[in-house]
Image (cartoon, rainbow, N blue to C red; front, side):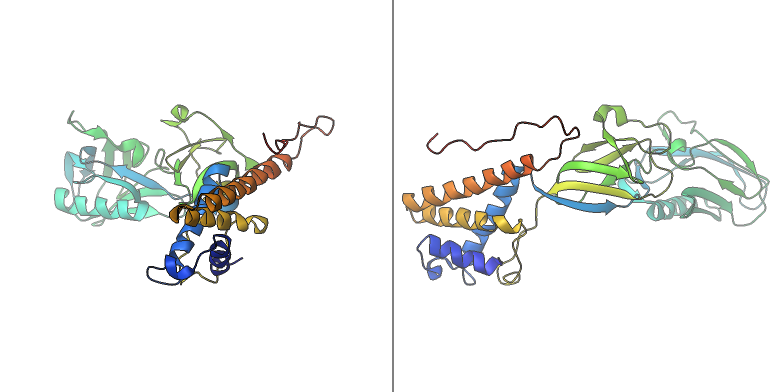
Length: 327
């Protein structure tokens, strides 16, 4: 049932003229009530199932006091041991490319040398190069200034000296630990990494993952998915979750079908009819159609609960029963 069809039915159920509800386009107030009904349906039922595949992308947080200590021995770009601030401003969830760009700006402005920081998209590591190709040693270490936060683990994830004009790190700590969930996410049903199911775990266990590896657990806060251990490469990350469908726009989406399962397309229609009745101070219309809305909502919850398979055929969970009429 399309948005336009739902609005027509709602106005018929409410025994009202669409002209009385129009503000900018025909039946746009009714269509707003339809959207409200879909949102209410999803809020009360926990959302509608949906599946997707997520992409792991290294992300970086920096603050103006995050720093490392750099030493370049020999050549035109020689630098005595110097604390090097990562960025003059705070940033959250920088992409690796943006992080490299900020680092290069700081290298030029702070150190005044011709060197380049780059991100290897194949191996997920940062590398530092002396463009003059004259350095004999390059060393990165923790900053000496006590007012700075040591950023080594989150940049190169190693310390020490490398000979020659090139310094390469390993996968930065925690850079792949967090992934943004879809904006329509309400709750998780299950999550798979490389076809293996991940198990939920308390969020406070994820504050510092410490080491990379194959993810086994996950936790969620504020639509952010956190994996442990944090992955070293991209694998298939499959998510099945409950979601909140996006609103349909009056006029633009009039021919778009309702995002709810087909057998529940009338639920937001009844909700819209009830709201029209409330607006018109028609208590009979309001009570009748809001009751029908709640009835369809409950039927959906019952059907969802009773279609969940049991792991052991000999043990059947007690089905959810509808309360007798009048109770």
